Length: 299
Image 1 (cartoon, rainbow, N blue to C red):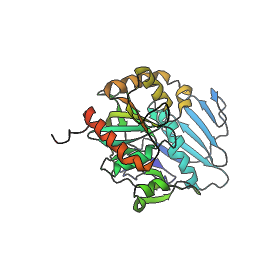
Image 2: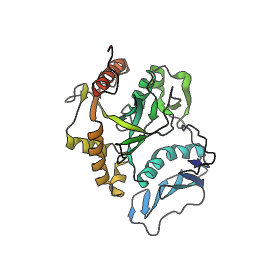
Image 3: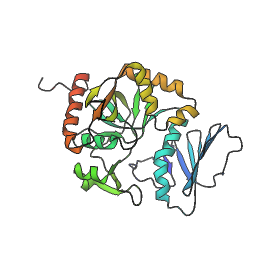
Image 4: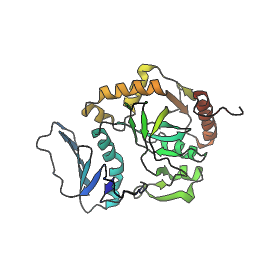
């Protein structure tokens, strides 16, 4: 990726002699698309183009999953625009490229990727960071692209991101020394350098949908039925409305089947309490051993 806007939270990479897969440039962006086939309050779709308007921040024009043109509004600082670029805009771009895009964080366990998905505030990044403290490298944070139809089974793409954690999580996990800049002004959420990160695509090992332990959901790890797996995948798309607008329902249905067959979908239900984090991590390690992702302990 090549960008004219500095993208905080991404790990820089060398691109000597390599053409970028995505180019981000600054320039004039139209206020509307004359031939739009679908329109929402802040977006329009026309063929291979997607126009997104964040009022008071910027307009973004995405073309064919390869180009992003940005026009800043109202003297908005570039670092504020970058927040939307590495989140919502990247998610749209990946949808344009036909990839399965999940609201998830991922770590490496053995030679496979384990995903934790859920809405904002579900604890995806916090669990990934806690497991990073135990030596499991980060693969992606918050946004996870999956190639579901890869020859040897679904592949999870690394995203080269730093973690984004609330100050409470940073303090509870003892990560203050790795704390970087704030994600946004007046927001107690910060970029955090992962202890280790993995930069190659990995086969999918397991996917956990996070939820809080409250009746009728008891703490623990459970496996949903096949129908619920499909619903879980679509519900945890990075932007579910894009699945509909890009006509990708069938792709997500097939992806759910492929991912369920090659790995496993699970619910991870736990209290949102840092004091119980060691117990939750223990559940996961025991579960990975049962799934064959870890070498059996003491054997």
